[in-house]
Picture (cartoon, one colour):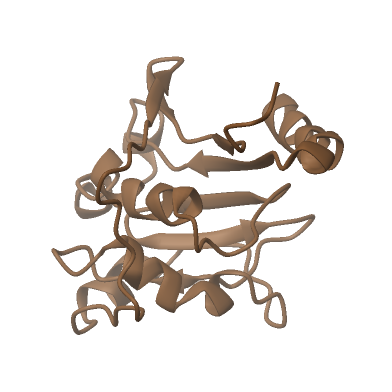
Length: 166
């Protein structure tokens, strides 16, 4: 909760400097979650299924997600407010790319049908065709994106600022 508060505060206070801040709460495979999640879901709770979302947030043509908090894991992505958006489900294969995340951004942030449980999302993802990609493709040629580890897990906080920020 502290990171969520920090993210929202940094987004508001840093806006005048062009700073954008987003928090990600990844669903992690751990001794605690292995007692409540099926093995096939735990197998899909890995950083490679978080990285495409982070890449979208780092891209120059990113959607505006500053000050927002997202829950994600095993191909499921939803925005958190006081409730969670219904989000969307991605097929966790080679078509799960930053362009696929960008193509479904409006579903990720749609609160018209709030959702509170993740039950059934993994089975839904397994039945999906390859993910639709956005156009133009999200690419990072000649750029660097850094995703760091924190607290024995993935720190998916993304903060970007223009080069002229003091």
